Length: 186
Image (cartoon, rainbow, N blue to C red; front, side):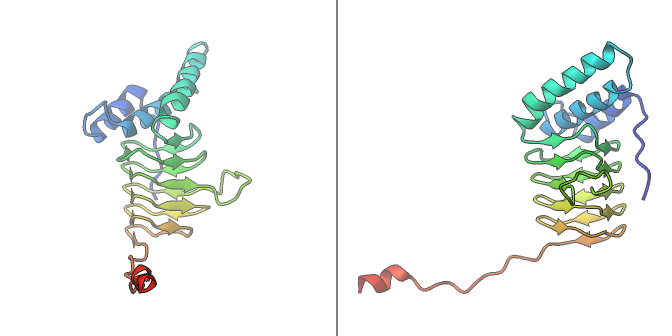
């Protein structure tokens, strides 16, 4: 699994993120990534820039990203370059999680701790070029290999090798129940 490199200048990463989000500043997924990047960047700056950047991050993260978009991206996560949050609603990315370059995350995705003690090792690490389908849940100390694809509505609690495809069980059609209203009227 490739290392996540986030040492590029902020302006370079923001331009890459903008291009990855279809060159549209109107995409809420891009807003979440930009606010995350500003928060990470602020930590490396001298005072008073650090203070102002941290304040900007906290206000935008609570007022817009979390409360309006329903997305939570911890500034303590490590997010690679050109990550696409394709559909922003209900995306959860916790502290210490690692997400590789060029990863795609769809809506209603939870990446979470495997235990309540919030041990930094108890979160998923996603490789490069991973695609995570809508409604998926990735939990615990697991590794998702490079170029893996996680289908919609999967619950993943074990390692996924590179280039693997994971699917949830398909929907089943159950035998229809007899209509109770017609027998009650007789």
